[in-house]
Length: 75
Ligand code: SF4
Image 1: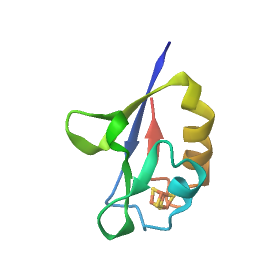
Image 2: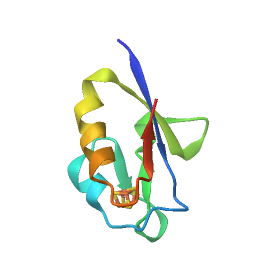
Image 3: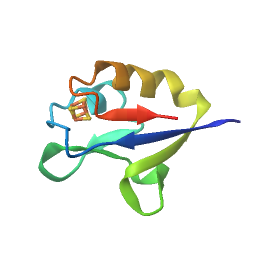
Image 4: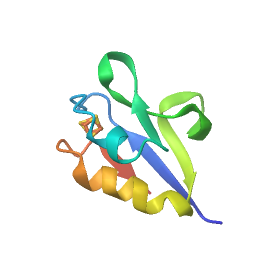
């Protein structure tokens, strides 16, 4: 199954909680409430970089499209 790369920019994240409310399978609250990728899907030992199965695409996209600061990107 195809994989989707997900990235969170903690420099612009305002810790609003929308992404981890909408898609807790992939996002969680990190330090100071800023978003990070859940440990299961992290890559490269970086809490802001992840890779998920395409089955989670809708979940990730809803979070991405609802982020008020456009801090979530996919590729
Ligand atoms: S929705 Fe955006 S601003 Fe809000 S916690 Fe998630 S990444 Fe941060």
